[in-house]
Image 1 (tube, chains in turn blue, cyan):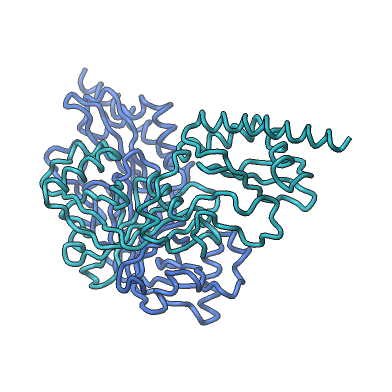
Image 2: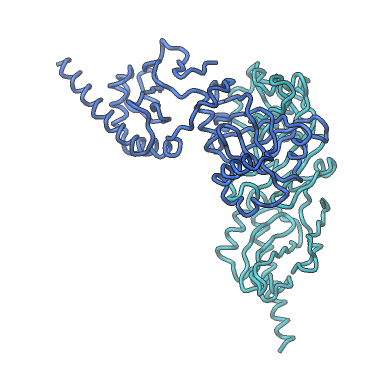
Length: 273
Length: 273
């Protein structure tokens, strides 16, 4: 499956927007997802029953794309890793009405215990930044820091969006800064700016008959709507002029786009008269 | 670690209630947890990178203690299982303030594809009862039913409560019927019946100086409170006269216990005067 920066949707002839609109890569989507979730399932190879894949609940942080764990030497997963470092970490979104529509990432690689002072200090800083409550037991002697050195990874973004992501894409990707506020922007647009979204559809897409539109997604590169057309609901994706980094930046860009849309639609009416 | 029906807390000399109070076994706690959660992490042995434990997000149902999956033949976990059936399923509670305080269960065993009509019909009924939306694709040809035949399991109920549960305990255990309404009862008691809980502590425990008490847990066999005593907050567990099966049953038992407590406390005052 495609993992390009400009991933083109299937069925191009049928889509009502520019298929070359910038879209997050799977590496970026995966990195964003894992950066915004603090717990996952660590999979190790069990000692007993020997060789069985063993899933356990863990907290983690991310250091340059590699998960950091702070785990008890008495825990099953730690005993397993001491014998065989092969492991994976599943990180999954939750809370949606349809659980299989949520995104998830499996990171695979060798886990190794961090022993050098420098490595442990770096892991400690990474872990405490995400799990400040761990400061109460961070110096207990029976816990140690481990790093999963990611060698391969699989991303599933819900139905029909999945791929093995290249390690280079994973390493290069940065988390999407809009993840922290996208839901708020989407809710605000849908509650208070229904007309603006119809204007976006009419001015910037082929859904020129759209009677209504609902925002369904937003990322640093653009946003997505479901437009009510004569042929039923259709997806529309539109680009931002530049990467969005803040909620205020998103608000300003939405206003700029609305002015531009109204200008273009007024010009079009002028032509038609 | 203990897994008895009457698991005795540690530090008995210090506890302010009858240490023989009936308490759910770890098998019962595990069975209740898994019965009330619909998604988990399936751990399989990867084809590529070969032999690595691979974690993937799955939906499941439970058939007599064995997880049932309805999975696509194109999915990585299915390809993995077709080569090697060794697997585990991690099921974890979520939503608490401290993620490591939540319960989780790892079920380990061999997964096998169900091919006999009878097995598939039974799995289908089990799965659709929990995931009714799957009816839209339940008859797609590229999906199949799999059963994880549980051979061993580990329960972690949060900090310091964990054990390998015997297969017999897991098979015999039934889900706690109070799980569906316990949170509501606890909230109601804490909001509206603070005095009743102080009376329970005074009449039925050694926390006879309790100035306040908060309900912290409820199961079919009894309930737990945190009592404010001269020595600080202390846990109290009290039994029900018989197993609770409904919210109304819990309410009636709370009223019965309050009458009994008031009667005993009045009798005690009478003795003291």
